[in-house]
Amino acid sequence: MVPGWIDPETFKLNEHAETVRLIFKLLLDGESLHNIARHLQANNISSFSRRKDANGFSVHSVRTILRSETTIGTLPASQRNDRPAIPNYYEAAIDAATFNKAQEILDKNRKGRTPASDNPLTINIFKGLFRCQCGLVFTLQGLRISMLGSTGAITT
Image 1: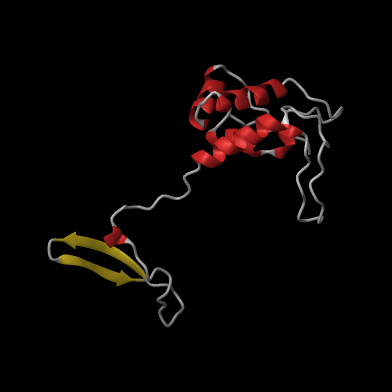
Image 2: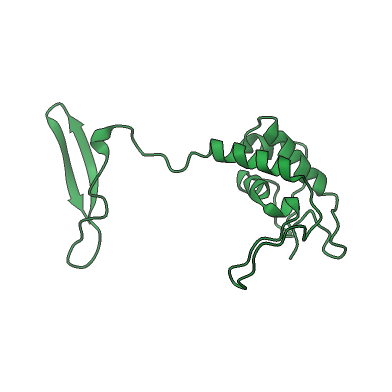
């Protein structure tokens, strides 16, 4: 299976390679993933999914393209076949310098999971440590913070 910007019969770039270049250009110009997806949808640029029910670009599909080493021509490593990545397997849609700049931007903007609260009193240092006899983990729910202190109920 080849990426959507590669013709499966000739292994050459197809018309969707321009879309890949546009996605990288918009990111390097400072656009967010959400704005890139919105731009592609607003300009009726079709996604290159081979599924008939595909309905355009999403933040997820834009991020997947930006993270994909196949954009620089590399066939990703396969854990199933214990095969390393193969550079220059495909024709590159973008150059390695552009890909690396994009990775830096994505890494810098990555937030990861944010805590529900910044309040240090709500951090549960015992999370996952207490178990009942049946093996389930106890969780703290219903924490209330008042002038007198905090109260909570431990439930399973």
